Length: 221
Image 1 (cartoon, rainbow, N blue to C red):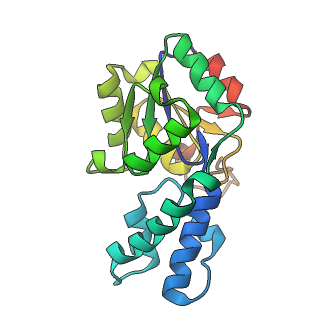
Image 2: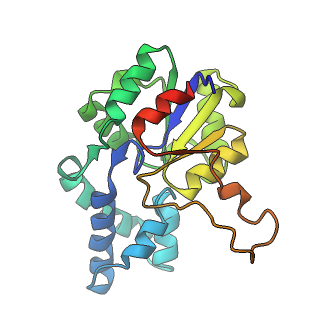
Image 3: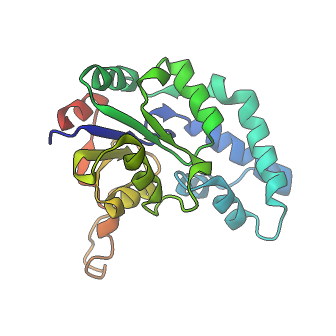
């Protein structure tokens, strides 16, 4: 494909944050209801800005208070429960050595994203970041990817967006960049045409590329 620009989602793609995100949600549900939340529902929110998911889960409640509960758990457990997916750090470093532009496009706040990249030893490999507070519209809207491309000085045809959720894939497709879904995703599955879908119904959710191992990302360059 000869791509010059590689855009990565953070949670579930570069970093295995599944445990800390799920546990943060459970902590919030227990704060409200006294019992953990439904894990399948929690996973369905992966890739979506937190405040949007919170408003869906707890309509009419003080969302700022509940986000505080969620983030309090993460502040205490983020480093111990978060690690890079095997091979991803090496891939990022190889891409950087090869002269590729690297961007992070995430719905996570900048401070914890930077903490993760620093702890993985790859902060200096990242040329641009677009985090939760950087755009008025969020995934699956294409605005985060469009801003990332602008920061990097890249055209959509040069770029690939690598993610683990339908939010990532739709965002990439709408921005006109190549979309790649990682095989270790728990948040997204490739839509299956069972014959009952309307024409084009799931097209925006279809990735251009399926990535089975991190080192396959190198083949896109």
